[in-house]
Amino acid sequence: MDSYTDFAEVYDMLMDDVPYRDWAERIIRILHENGIHDGLILDLGCGTGTLTELLAEAGYDMIGVDLSPEMLDVANAKKVESGHDILYLCQDMREFELYGTVRAVICVCDSINYILNEEELTQVFRLVNNYLDPEGLLILDFNTVHKYRDVIGNTVIAEDRGECSFIWENTWQEEEQINEYDLVVYVQEEDGRYRRFDETHLQRGYIEAQMQKAITDAGMVYLGSSDAEADGPITEKTERGWILAKEHGKA
Image 1 (spheres, rainbow, N blue to C red):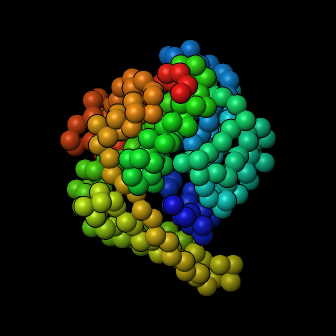
Image 2 (image 1 turned 135 degrees about the horizontal axis):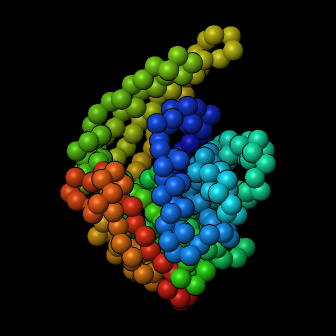
Image 3 (image 1 turned 30 degrees about the vertical axis):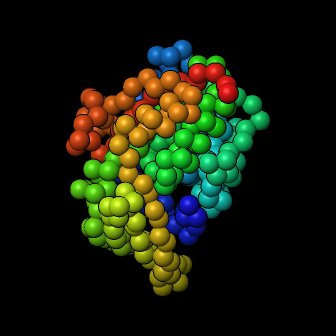
């Protein structure tokens, strides 16, 4: 899970097509439907803090947890610019610690796919359950096996953004159900020359049944799911699924 080092400085530029505002609106709608109009929210795997900022803008008190110090450096720069009072913690989601409980935990932009086995997935959800208020919510998304295997697996994506270019090579590992992507990025420096850096990322593809089992094994209540794009039920063609669960007492 040691990723997003040099990549952090160009992450927002290369992910400019991610519909963060749409996701924020959806999350806020779900929170409101469940009576959560304010209070403390945890953004687990917050990255550069784009979604964290949008929820802070909506009036929530935000905590952001991420494993990458470099990503959090970008998030803290955004916090300085916006003036939002966000607490960022550099922690591994498999063993994160908070000072108290929160009303909801969100974990989106396929952050949960960096958890590569089901035992550790259940452990993450146990921690989520532990740090949620009574009947607090978990709002989660995940990339499916179908997306990694049939859509982006064993493909190469390349883009030239002028000041930044990248080559993104995906390799699907069927036995492990893991997508490995090898990233080569060229960033233009002030003197016009380009600096190269390489990163390798591993993400595990999941199906809904695996997510549901890990959540219920962790002691939480599984409330339902939907297709992120079609906004209907998850099917065999779903690429990104949304899941809603709630806290159900402490062990």
